[in-house]
Amino acid sequence: MAMTTELAEPADPFPGSGDPGNADETVLAAERLLTARLGAQVELADPADLGGSDRSLVLRVRVARTPFSLARTLVVKHRTTDDDADGFAREAASCQLFTALHPDDRPGPALIASDPAQRLLVLEDLGRAGTVENLLLDGDRAQAERALQDWARALGRLHAATSGREADFAALLRRQGESGTGDPLAEQGRAALEGVPDLLDDELGTSPSPGLEEDTRRAAKLLDGGRYRAFSPADLGPDNAVVVGRTVRFIDFEGGGFRTALLDAAQLRVPRPSTPSWHALPAEVADAMESIWHAEAAALWPELGDRQACAELLLDAQLLWTWLRTWWLLPNPGARRAATLVARWQWLEQQAESSGRSALAAYAGGVAPALRHRFEVPDDGPTLYPVFA
Image (cartoon, rainbow, N blue to C red; front, side):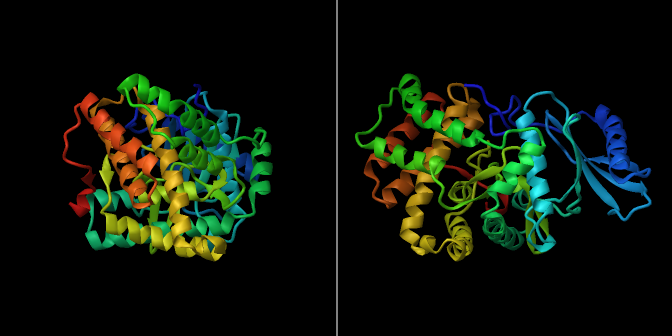
């Protein structure tokens, strides 16, 4: 299956920074873009590599000269490969959507300028504060827990600020040269829901449990339904959440779009289901985050006030993310990624048992040990983030 955005599994699952050799060219391109946009010469200096990926170079630059009122520093993101025009357009449209919001409601950086031909973005600099992941890997536990709570609250407020703005986003996508229709996550999700049982049968010899079709049908409805729709970054993760005082703002929107907010909320329950993290959060911390998001969501969508009904929908979303992760990684995940798969199937089994979803629990309970045996994953459970260890 051809993947079309950053949601697809990258060739390098743990990418390093962009090519430093492109930094000077990127700064010059950003200067030309800002000069053309503002109608007067803009000079940028002191580029600092913020650690992009094998496909993007991300720099913080100082505004050295401008006749206009600009922030002292800006962030320049340059897509350095020719693939995935849709991903660039989605990020540009996402940041442009945020720019139209009140500054207090912006969930991500404002867009200063963009050039689709060069795949170049000039963005608001969210500051030098670290990410949530920085605190989880090397921080104080109390600070990390506050940041996680702020992260969950920010996610709920992102959904509240963008609910009802889907038509605006589609129009912004069209301005970037994209059709404004279709959702890459939905396309990949449907393929996974259809293909994973056969894939697991071929790779592990695990057969679907009787009645599992009802569980996958419920998950598919999240991809098709119009309920609880809001802007979704898609690729949530603590490395994409920047701590700004007592708020959190999001970055990286190459898979951004409008879909059910439950798919985002499920990523609070299972750490980074769309990315290859092998760390976990303590159950009580994840529960607290889910409760904070739920309070924001129930104010926006009162029918989600029923916690049991909401939990069932989140389980459907968790199933979808588990299927997707499996679809992306098998049959050759490597030791670290195999461990993440085992953990995700174990978490799915636990949640399904708690909800009385016996067919799903039985299936997940068979897949997890089969994966463990096939890829020789030690039976020592998921590893907590260092700050909780």
